Length: 177
Image (cartoon, rainbow, N blue to C red; front, top):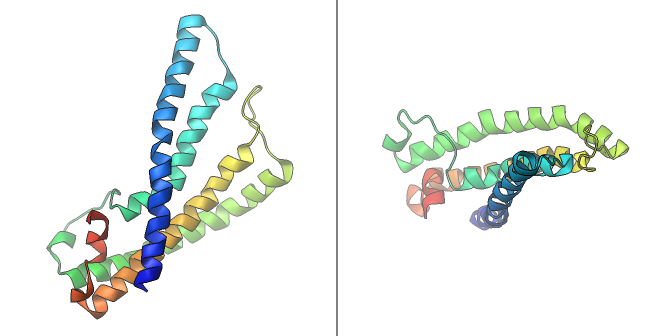
């Protein structure tokens, strides 16, 4: 179980590390768009869309990395005061009760639109926009898949802690080491 969790963690860590380099690219593109528009009265729809689409892709595909590193928002009323086993139970049940149903809902609602987009090789509705809207829409499936895998890692680590709290860090401490 731990080997599989480590493999999933490494996958999402690698993806997160690659995606981090996209943020400076987005900032530069945004600055170029602003300078061209306000400094030279030039506009390129594809360039304006590029930083918006990149931002969407980075946030959807990087969500599993954020979960892995505990960068998400947690309403912590009592979580940190619990034992390792108590935190593991919350992580396990939270994944099963909240994360997986949400991912199922998103994937099942997104799938028909993604299929249509690929069948049409959908492009931007903006004249002069980017020609591959279907790739951006596919990021929703990447979001669901990567988060489902990271949820599996979280559950496996939680099960290990529930079975033997001395076996390793709690699922809630895994991203801090």
